[in-house]
Amino acid sequence: MESGRIERRRGGTRRSADTWRTLIAEQERSGLGVAAFAAARGVRPATLSWWKSEFRRRDGARRPDATQFVELVAPRPGPMTAGGFEAVLRSGVVLRAAADVDVEAFARCAAALERAC
Image 1 (cartoon, one colour):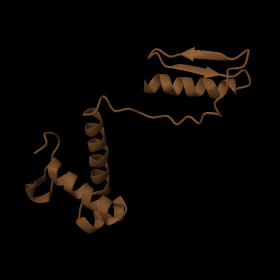
Image 2 (cartoon, rainbow, N blue to C red; image 1 turned 30 degrees about the horizontal axis):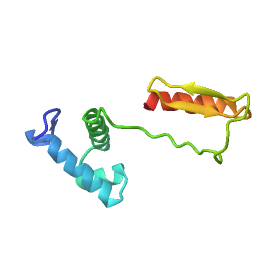
Image 3 (cartoon, rainbow, N blue to C red; image 1 turned 90 degrees about the vertical axis):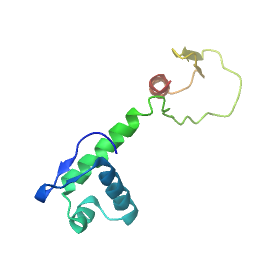
Image 4 (tube, rainbow, N blue to C red; image 1 turned 135 degrees about the horizontal axis):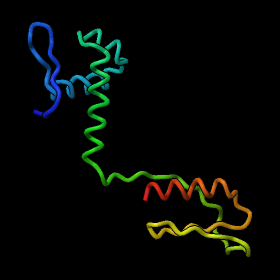
């Protein structure tokens, strides 16, 4: 059983985190929205939503090494033209660009890669 918050239900019974995980998995497989599923199962939509976000937070905390990918579309390979430039990220990744590259787009890509690396 997962440690953490337990919801107190009418009559004094409570749902465990494992029970909420099961309910969330059922809701996702059902194709129903949170409100419709919650109404059908007799749970509060806000509580179901809270548990969904709580599990996303917990599961994300278990994977600190998770990698974020940024898609870059490269132009056809070719020699660097005079006047091109490069950026060296803290991770050691080198980004090179020709002189006619959109500088703002290049800067956004470099910043995204810096955050991801």
